[in-house]
Length: 166
Image 1: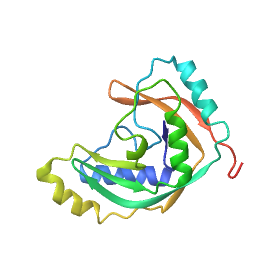
Image 2: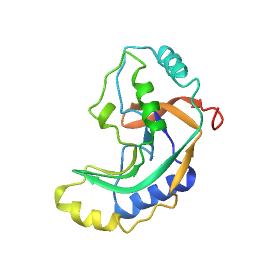
Image 3: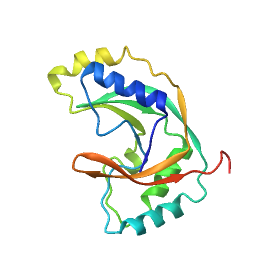
Image 4: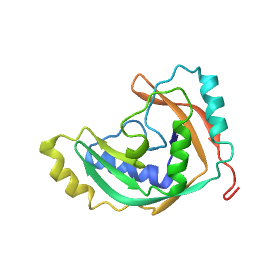
């Protein structure tokens, strides 16, 4: 489950990736839960997610800034109570596998670079820190169920969210 960033942030992220010669996995996206496997059919999974998202209003995501962990650089987002609750509800849909990055370890972010080699890490980090996000926050109006197919992220279903505060 992902939220696609608005066009301005998506375009900016892709241009920074191009300039720095790095990539994430697929187009820039905000994972609402880590990739998972499930024995459910697509129709069953969509129905379960629809139920979990039934009362979900649109929401804003605050962009915090760059974060680096071994081999990964990402644009970290604030884990609001609303985002935590949404993540927890999505984890309940299943049965499904869980990633070490779900639950207590969930950190919302947009990945800039995956697989950064140790010898390139320091120089790349210095270059990344000079890049300022064009947006300090963005509104999420829909969520998308995606799957990985032959190294590409494919959208299976889009779930429009309710009006703000409804």
